[in-house]
Amino acid sequence: MPLAVLYDIHGNLPALEAVLDEARLAGADEIVVGGDVFPGPMANQCLDLLRATSLPVCFIRGNGDREVLAARAGAMSPEIPEQFRPAIQWNADQLRAQDVEIIRSWPLTLQRSVERVGDVLFCHATPRNDTEIFTTATAEAKLLPIFDTLDVDLVVCGHTHIQFDRVIGRTRVVNAGSVGMPFQDPAAYWLLLDGRVDLRATKYDLPAAASRVRQTAYPQAEHFAANNILSAPNATAMIEALSKAELT
Image (cartoon, rainbow, N blue to C red; front, side):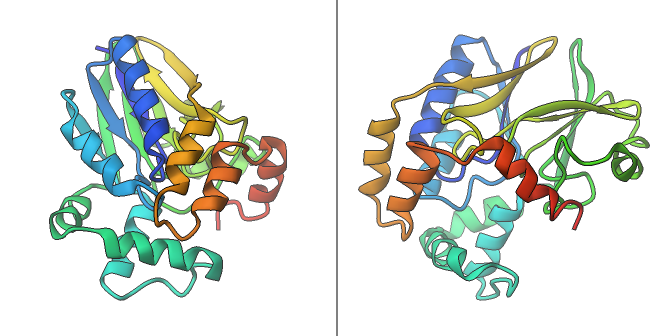
C-alpha cells in the first residue's frame, strides 16, 4: 500500500499537480499532507485539488495553515515578519467559511502503521510543536529528548523545506522536503513510503508554473515565481541560516 507524503505545498498548484501525477504512476493509494498547504499563490486551488482526488487524503496542520487561520480571525501573530504579512493576510481573505472549518479540524500529528516500514509518526516541525527548527547540522544530543522516547520506527517531518534522512538515537527521522517551495534545487520534493523510505524530487515545467503564478493576485507573485520556482535558495546556505534558529 504505497503512501505518498506531501509537505509544504505553499500554494504551488503546478508542483502539486506534477507530484500527484507521479504518485499515481508510482501506485500510491493514499496521501498524507504534512502541513502548510497555506500560504501561497494558489493555496485554495491546492486544497480543492487534494479534496477532489480519488485517493484518500489525511491532513495535519502546519504553522502556515495556523497563521492563515489566525489572520482570518483578525489575530495575526506579531511575530510574523513584516515582509510575510501581506501574503498571509491575502490568503486569509481568500478563505471560504467551509475551508476555515476544514483546516481547524486538522490535527497536529498523525500516527500510522505502514507495511514494511513500521509505526510512523507524522508531524510538521517536531512532535512537540509546528515551529521548531532542526537540520542535518543539529547536534544529536539536542534532539534525543524530542525523538528518542517516541517508540515509533519512523518520524516524518517538514517545515525546513530541505529533504534529509537521519537517525536520532533509536529513531529514524526523515524530512520529506517541500512540494512547492524547496530550499534546494528547483523541483517538487516529496516522500513515497512503499515498503521503504523513497525520497523523491519531481521535475515539472518551471517556466509554465512561474507564468501561472504571475497571473494570480498573490501579493508576492513575482518573488515566488522567480525565487521559489525558477530558482531556489541554496541548501547549504539555508542549513547554515536555519541552524542559527534551531529549536527556538
